[in-house]
Amino acid sequence: MSLDKHIEKVLFSDEAIAERVAQLGSEITSQFSGDSEPPVFVGVATGACLFLADLVRRIDLPISIDYIRADSYASGTVSSGSPRISFDLKLDITNKHVFLVEDIVDTGNTLSCLIEHLKLKKASSVSVCTLLDKPSRRKVHFKLVGDGKFYSGFECPDEFVVGYGMDFAEQYRNLSYVGVLKPECYM
Ligand code: IMP
Image 1 (cartoon, helix red, strand yellow):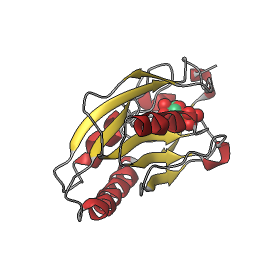
Image 2 (cartoon, helix red, strand yellow; image 1 turned 60 degrees about the vertical axis):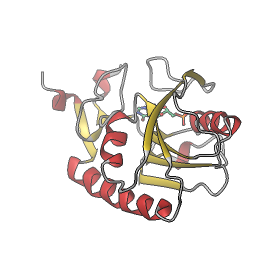
Image 3 (cartoon, rainbow, N blue to C red; image 1 turned 180 degrees about the vertical axis):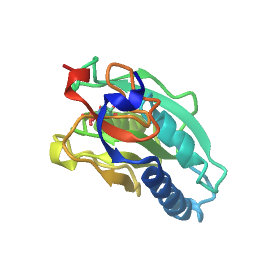
Image 4 (spheres, rainbow, N blue to C red; image 1 turned 90 degrees about the vertical axis):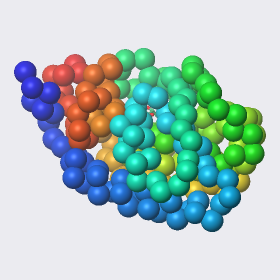
């Protein structure tokens, strides 16, 4: 059965995502264009893989790229609430501007843990760009570092979404859009 048949509804189409990613790319390029030290873009694995790949191609600056991983979900649709860093940066970010790229901010637990970690590693600023934000589900109010800024692609309704990097039980990341799964696919 085709992957599309597992999807109940499309929330953000390929075209809508591409348009928003291009806008974010030019806003972020303007944010850093006056800086002598270009930022380090850090993708939060695995969910941000597609978003990071598309976003960095819209950034017209000599950036560097790294990955970090924080695990908080087992294989269900509810966060465990206590993320831990399970794969760390390769680059030294001391005194660097860091730009965290996330797929989705839900309770805020993961982001808060990541920001604290980057702060301990002495980043001079931490900005965040998430493709999706679910503010209605926020439990932890994270604080950015230095003059870091928060960017969000789209506000997401309180539904479990998959696609464009986001998974259910490690599947559906390769969908080119974001959608809601049919209940029979996760029951
Ligand atoms: P938080 O710690 O609750 O903010 O959750 C953040 C992480 O949970 C994200 O980086 C995603 O990997 C995952 N997550 C949260 N909501 C969803 C969803 O609707 N679909 C897929 N993954 C999600």
